[in-house]
Length: 166
Image (cartoon, rainbow, N blue to C red):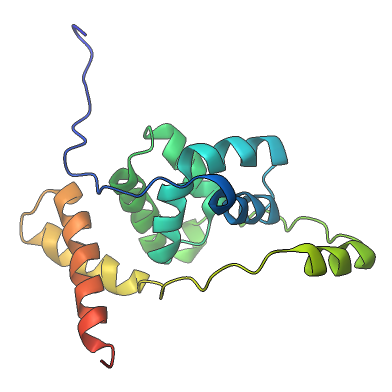
């Protein structure tokens, strides 16, 4: 395509494809966070792998993550950078969180609790503050921000793995 910049995605991590029943917890979480079910269905189908990865990094606002994934064409590193930068803003500059969705009636909660499948235990969440600190350190040393994000995540995961009892 002439005159159109093609983004370099070579630094993007390879994520496993999420399909079938594995999409359900992603959809349910997006709906629980206040996203409309039709949009949550489309977002979970398109971005489930990225959302799960962001969740493992400690990024909990999946609705904001979906907005950023749409803006950056699903590029995980761009989204992680944007969410990290947002987390570094002073609290008074942060926009207020969206209002909580209304609670379902008690009977619906009881039925949902009985009917809901048990999700497998999620892997240990990565420490967002450690990743942010490592990211800042790597950028300050002159590393490209995308590469710094990748290395920060990898290094913190490695440190966490080494710290786990065998």
